[in-house]
Image (cartoon, rainbow, N blue to C red; front, side):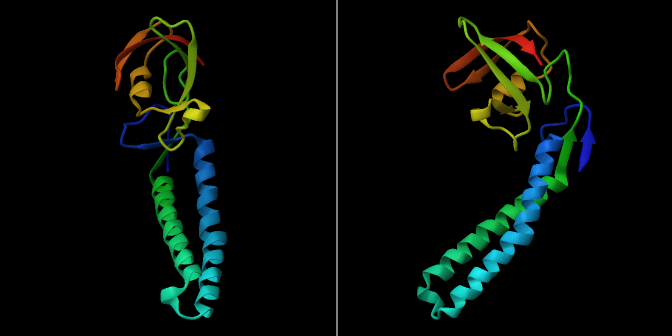
Length: 162
């Protein structure tokens, strides 16, 4: 894990300290608690007899495979994480909360720029790698920017940066 004050290159896995801690806790839970539970389920299912027709055994094996894949993914994320701690005040960067307005619209939309692991449109958190997130980076209040969507080019103005 590295800590960085400025935004990193797009091939780095950027995370806030909060998300990093959350992923480490999930990894810890999976490797200690969940692995043990799955091992117990497999042992019980094996005791039921013929494994070729044992649905409980097959379900436990599938859960084990999915859990091990998640563990591998989390280990990679945690190992390659770059913690971005410094938030820019006057320009859009990682961690910025940005209010924008689409050209011709009267309503504003507010998003927080986050790493790809934290992106969640329900919470208005967009990745710095997304077309919109990338287009906003390094812009200042009042700047106009465009980016391409499946519906064509869109033009927005930065209303506020927090």
